Length: 182
Ligand SMILES: Cc1cc2nc3c(=O)[nH]c(=O)nc-3n(C[C@H](O)[C@H](O)[C@H](O)COP(=O)(O)O)c2cc1C
Image 1: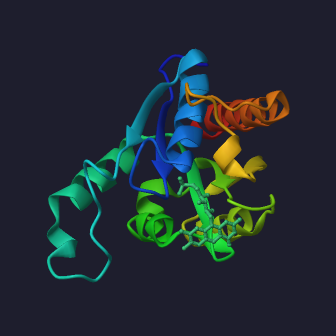
Image 2: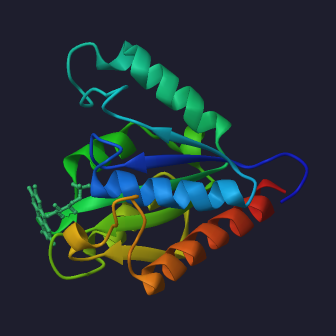
Image 3: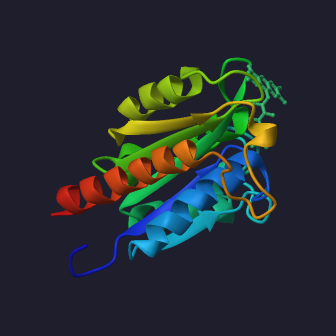
């Protein structure tokens, strides 16, 4: 992986690490850690980000800590639940606290969870938003439909094929991050 470990940040478009998006992004972080990456999960239930525009948001200490962490990181895993055919408001608000100066030229791995049938809407919408941040989402991506049944009691994906797809996302992100950092 190169001399210095990659630093990878996981973000979920939900408030709890135990949400399905939280489980999915943490499964990705665990895989990245096994490949030697230095990983961190931003838990919004512990450090919520204010809504962009609300009173006091521009100097909020959580925003300052979040943006400082973005600068330190080489790559990002994003997992959003699909709400009404697109990313959750929580994920969009999280992305609204990112700017080109924090994440431009850095690599992203995208995931989404759905209560219903698997589709790529949320993944496509996150991909479009990342264009405005000059982010580099890898082509590999993962949407997990019927997500209520998708995880076992240990927070692992039950379906071996989905585990393989997640591994492909993680490997692609790490490989691309090494190249772009160089
Ligand atoms: C407001 C709302 C809208 C939703 N819209 C959709 C939808 O459009 N398609 C779908 O498959 N599931 C939809 N769901 C189900 C969520 O995608 C599902 O509960 C979520 O992926 C679970 O992940 P989480 O635990 O991270 O929230 C919706 C849920 C909520 C609360």
